[in-house]
Length: 356
Image (cartoon, rainbow, N blue to C red):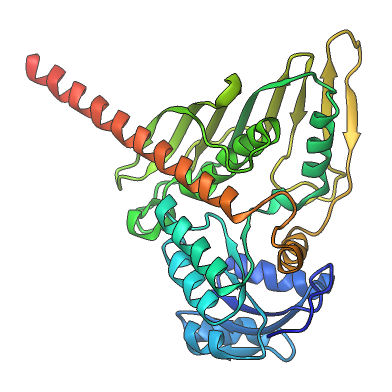
């Protein structure tokens, strides 16, 4: 259907579905890094598609997602729409024979994720979730370091991805129908990271927690605005994950082992601020920690290259569609735990008020 992709994805002709902030960043970076050609843009709002396409020489604005997907000049699509549209667009793109890079979270629940991945597999197209940190040299360096036994046997991960925003019921972050909530928006990073490390330890990229105990708070719009969870995997590996849209805390990760620990100050966007990505390894019996510095790759360019790799080999490095499905299934359980806990808390308060 398309030209053979180059290793860095530069030969791919891209169609962009959505014209919001993240789509604009993708288009800008692919142009500046030469990681692919933007051939078309589509949006629910044609004027936004025209504006974004107009900033790219040779790009065409399409008046619908379907029209873009029907165009034979496009090899791959980047889905940058709101979360609830992901599953439908993945299925439509697969049916049209387009390779797919879809923004996180892949869908809004595990069942939809599994169906979307099945559709891509049946169509013979590559599907990659745009979990950008997964395609960075820093993440690969972490994997190699843990595999070398530098901190002994990895035992536990503590990881957070959160930010503080004012409550606005009109914002998609707080709208249940638009896929709002901290767990879906940025908690997917925390869960993905915890599962990734567990998968390295267990040699199973689809590893899910055997037990999950979660709690948190629901905003007035009934979406979670902060949440925590404790995870227990096979062989006793554990994790603590945290997230929130109204909870600002350090966005970092710590991996604890039997002989030391690793601290990652910026797991999510290494090198974005221009500094060299690095993590710190502290070992039992060593007075000074070791600072491991890593290269950085353009964040969206690395995602484009990951899709090219998946087209060639069937997998984007260590991240596979079954990995994405396992994360979505785990997020389902986390959200259910928060909602159940909030319901119990509310019931207890009502009972207490009635007894007074």
